[in-house]
Image 1 (cartoon, helix red, strand yellow):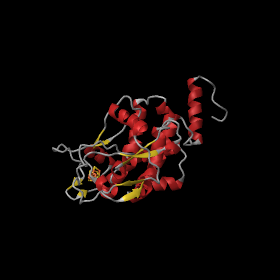
Image 2 (cartoon, helix red, strand yellow):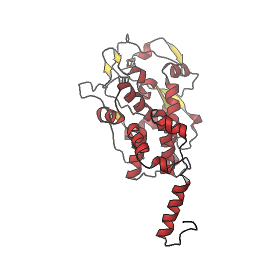
Image 3 (spheres, protein in one colour):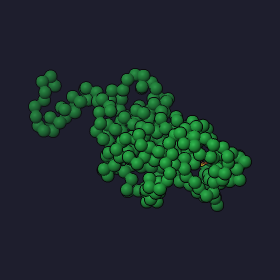
Image 4 (cartoon, protein in one colour):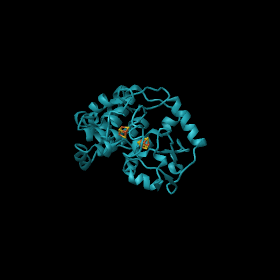
Length: 280
Ligand code: SF4
Ligand code: SF4
């Protein structure tokens, strides 16, 4: 992870910055001599939306996806859990999804596979002002796609690769991970790390939690949302982000039901040996 920090510094200092209107020459197709060479021995961090897309495409649960396809590196410097796509143990450390004719999960490939050769950075990380985001080119020596004559703007590339939808979904996750709580170096308790992990990476387990625990008795969640989250992972993830902001940072992103608050107040009064409130 230290290397990641170093690369980040280099990118901010040395890499030419591209706006959405800047152009670059690049193409990737089955005719390039390096076809598939980049789909191995690579660190691919997965976002919550990546996990949802991949486990749905593979027809498996989020738990099965985590067990079969991911690594969970531990870094005490990072305030929240991250997951990586686990490469296979063949000679090339191939991605589990690469086949002779290309990516077998192409329509649902992760955000970083879609972005390549572009990267995105924000010098203002921590300020929550993401308006100064910029793009840059990651020129891997193995990649011959830069010899292809096809020119496009950054924006055209993002649209062509279906990034827009991923970015919309990624915005809430980014807001969460760039929260001042983490930027200031605060640490989550093990219990809160579990909560973060469940919402962000194990959406099926979060669904069980919402419907099988007292969650819906504790929080105001409107009927349309309750109906949507029974099936819709994205709607459930959005609710999960609100719950995390409430539980991790103490924000008012969820409303606690009135009777739960009254019970809590009563409990507190009993602990403090105060007389119960009138009517109780
Ligand atoms: S998910 Fe697809 S595009 Fe990404 S590394 Fe694996 S095979 Fe390559
Ligand atoms: S190395 Fe570059 S050009 Fe070759 S397959 Fe990978 S992305 Fe495409």
